[in-house]
Image (tube, rainbow, N blue to C red; front, side, top):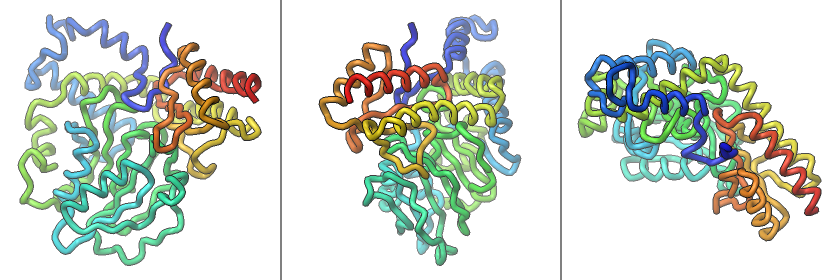
Length: 359
């Protein structure tokens, strides 16, 4: 039996994708080799690479005025690459803090230039997305950086800022989960290991004219232009991770695209949030109602003893990855695209049963 995988990342991958990869593992496209063995300069791999690019553009509606890059180093490397390329002397990079990952992004930018915190919800242990901030006076800034979804705290931006300067978003944990207007952003970046496939590749979507503004005094491998000019083939890319990305994107298209995926995600999260909201306080959501994430549902139980009991019984029923992060405690269910609706329904049913037996 397959586990009910609610891990926060690396996370669930569609079963159909895993089965296809298994089938093709030792003989991809009749080459007599695994895709892991192909030269990244070969026609067979080039087709995989280009297919992943084309599918991502189709699914997200990415215009031709944007580059799509496949990079390495995870989103964490982007925390440094962005200020290296775009934070010039006498400019300020602006950040809105909504969790640990935005804090880490800010830390890297601070090491490279001037930064400013526009807003933060840290004083409430990041239980909500800030709304009481002003973007007046930042017109000369280098960029505004946000983290669209916060895995640890279970919060998600519902409406993105309308920024007078380039808007950059770390969408590692919610890319492809709902419709977005790509043109609202100068750059979007995302590690693959939540909704796009296995860890190992990071997707960057960036306006070409924004990339043209980058500084020149950056090491070659850390220049976005290096990867854009070489179609993400400047050095050996993570070929197997990109192959898996292409399969996940094919799967997403077969589900009906972003609209269908968003509808499914709303239903999935709805089952679990209903179990929380209808529990008469037995379960308490960490995120405020207006900031709740579709991807990471965080909640606590009345005490530590019950929490341990809940997690132990959940594991016996093959629910995996439900322990909350130490920053919040309690529990967390990550309901990424590949988590089946049946898993979310089963979890909600178990939550109701556990409450009735332990209230």
